[in-house]
Image 1 (cartoon, rainbow, N blue to C red):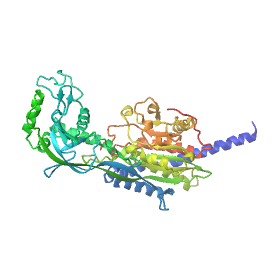
Image 2: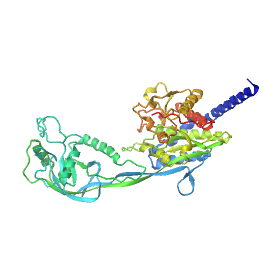
Image 3: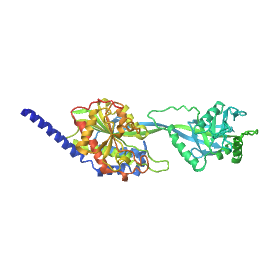
Length: 530
C-alpha cells in the first residue's frame, strides 16, 4: 500500500470524523427543555386547538415564521403581491348548511335540535307546501298507504318503520322478521316511493325520545359532516332529492293541526291492520335548507436554507401545524402530540442547522423546513404544496415527516426508547440504510417497522403528509410513536408529552437530514414497494 493511498485514506477518515463531530455538536442544541418551551405556546388554550384556517392556527403560523426569520431562513412563497413570504397561502372550499328551519304558524323549529336531516337537502329559498299524513308511507303487495291519497305537490309525513301488531308480527309478512321498510336505511325506500308519487318533501316521525333522541341528533350532526368536508377546489353539488326531515311526534302534531294522542291512535290502528276512512290529517308549513360555500383561508409555513455546492437539490423536513380545534361541547383539543410535537421538532431542527450555517458549516444541499396545514382535513396542505411546489419536485431528494412523536402507545408503554419508521425503504434502499446507520451511530433507539408492512390494517403510510411526496416518487420517512388514548381528544396536552423521549427522535431526524444534505451523491430511487 503506497504512502499516497494511506494519506488519502487518512484524509477521508479525518473528514468523516470532523463531519460526525460537527453533526453531534449542532444536534446538542436540540434539548427537551427547548422543545417544551415551544410546545407550551403551540399547544396552549389561547390557540384554541389550531383548527385549519382558525385564528389559533394563524397564531401558530406566525410563531413558527418568527423563529424561521430569527434563524435566517429565507421566505420564498410568492402570494401574488411580489413580496416573498414564509406563508404559502391557499384556500379550502367547504359546503355546509346555512339557514335551515321549519316554520309552522310563524314559529321556527331549529335544525339539529327540533329535527335533523337524512341525506342532502337543498331548499335555497323559503318554500311553503301543503302537508298530509301518509301512514307508514309503504306500498307493497295489497298494502298501500297511498291508495286513496293524492300527494302531488305536497309534503308527506310518515311514521318510522312498518306496522307491527301487539303479538310482535309485522303485517307485511306476518312474521317476526323485519322487511326492507324497517332498519337504518329504510327511509330511503320511503323517500323514493313518496317522490315517485309526486311528493315534494318527506317528514319521518322518529320513534326515539329522550336521551336516545338526543344521542341520535348528535350522531346525525357528525354524519352530516360528510356533506361539508373541505376540498381544494370548489364543488358543485347536485342534490337528488333523496332526503328527509326527521321529526318528533310533538312537531308532527303541530304540522298536522292535531294532538299527539290522535296521532298515536292513528299509528295504533295501522299496527292493527285497520285504516280510518275519515279525511286524512293535513296542514301546511314553510321550510328552508340553505347550502352555502364557505372559503377557508389557510397557509403552509415554509423556511428555506440555501445549500452550498449542491444548492439546486433540496431536502424537505415536514410536519403539520394544525389540529382539530374545539369540540362541539366547547372543549379545546390542544393537539400537543398531534402534531404539536412535530411542529416544534421542525423549529428545533431548523435552529440546529442555522447554528451550523452561522459557523460556516451549512448544508451542501438546500433544506426546506415545511409546516403544512389541512392535514386533519385530508392532507390538503401537503397536497397543495405537491401541486404548487415552491421548489422543483424533480430536485427534491426526500421528505422527512414528523407526526406524533411525543407519547408512547400501549405496545411500548414499558419501553419508551423507540420510534415507528414508516416508508423509508418504499422508494429508496439508500434512505433506509442511512436511517439505520444514523440510529446505530447516535441514538440507538428501537426502529419499529410494524406499520411499514403493507398488510398492516392501520395504513399509516397513507395517512400523513409524507404520502403526497411519495406519490410524486420522492423518497420519504414518516416518524411516529403511535396512537394513544388522547388521540383527537381534549386530553392531548403538554403535561403528557415525554420530552426526554422526544428529543432523541428529533436528533435522529437531524442526523438523517445532515447525511442526506451533505453526502456526495443524491440518494437513488431504486425501490418501488407497496
